[in-house]
Image 1 (spheres, rainbow, N blue to C red):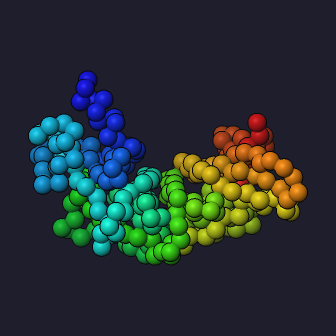
Image 2 (spheres, helix red, strand yellow):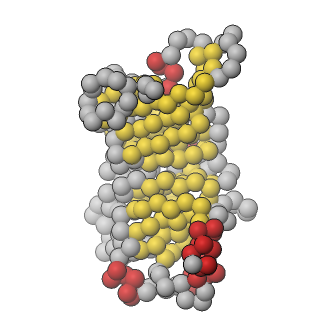
Image 3 (tube, rainbow, N blue to C red):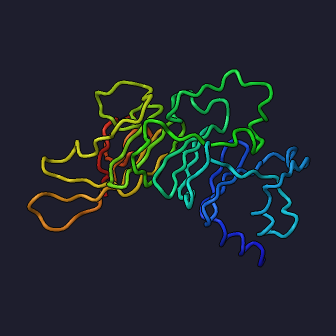
Length: 266
């Protein structure tokens, strides 16, 4: 029990991926742990076991791999946030740099990595996707270089980033409007990060500052702080877009999809 309690204290975030688990430690390191019983039986241990050894003792009992940034992180820079989609991963560092990582050969079918990487067909010397060494290095998203990112979020095949000043950009799959570019934006794949205008459904003079993003499947939610010119105080709204066929948009309307982020009724 003491070891389990110690483990919980050392972890900041856990996210399941295809045949593997992604772990972010409180000291800013990122790990991939295989969920494959066959791979764990082989115990492909390497010298990178120090973190798990610190938690569990000299024998961690699991095969894992520490994920690194291509070209390395800067001195003092560490991982602060991670989000895992169906086949891809996004992460952000303490300096606001954003990175992506393929978790399977289907990782960039809709350009959800923010890069032009292709993974089909896969080279024969690449480990199986269940292996934590399938893709050991994260790639910085080129079009977001120089933009201070505070949060990353992923859904099935879509990706989102929130900037330090409360703006939101999205890229990847948009077949039911889950990126939130508007009802008239019929593009099914957003190939590069595009800013999402969250204030479309508000009167002129309204200022919105996004404070959080949650995404899953083909539905996306944005928590925003709303204020208006000449009025005191601010208010918190929850906006939703994407698939709404089962009522998941919470807008009180019978609609299968909505491409414009709209307020969830409370």
